[in-house]
Length: 188
Image (cartoon, rainbow, N blue to C red; front, side, top):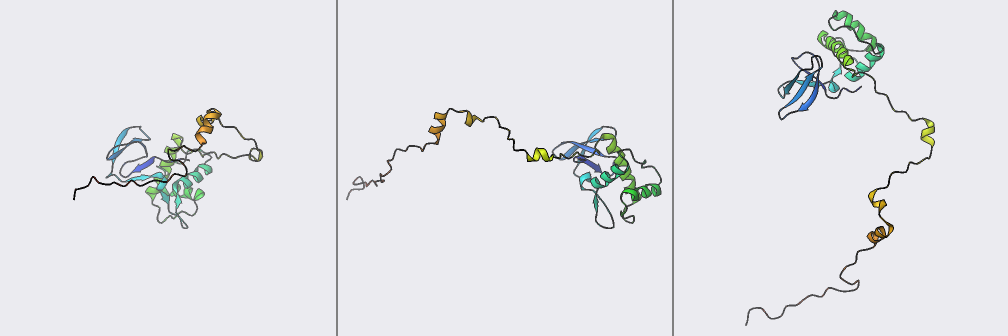
């Protein structure tokens, strides 16, 4: 489940997807009606990756809540957010039994269900498949030979010449002789 780039904007219903970034704003697209508009720095923007749900133990990330919700619903849509708040809260207990009912308001529970159904309809709640290596693949010693690089494709003579030490104008045992200037200065 990847909720990167999905945001909520205070005062606007629904969820939005970040499409582009402007100089002083971000261009967002509504996930319900696909309309685009700029969201400015003065808007209160919350990334879904950063939102957590209060529990009696530790706060739980929204992505984890949606994973539990997705598993409990077998990938089907949830109750409508327009249902009675008591009914919604009873259902939250089935997949998140330790949520803090005192700090989670009815409006938060409604958003939880509304956002879940929106994300599900967009196909963003499908669990990510982990790549698992089999024991056979892990224990084989077969090495795949990589294609030759430009350096390896050079003829052998060129490669040897490049690896030889560079010749200098100075001989190995020569000492630098200081030049002394005589005369040429101001006359006495």
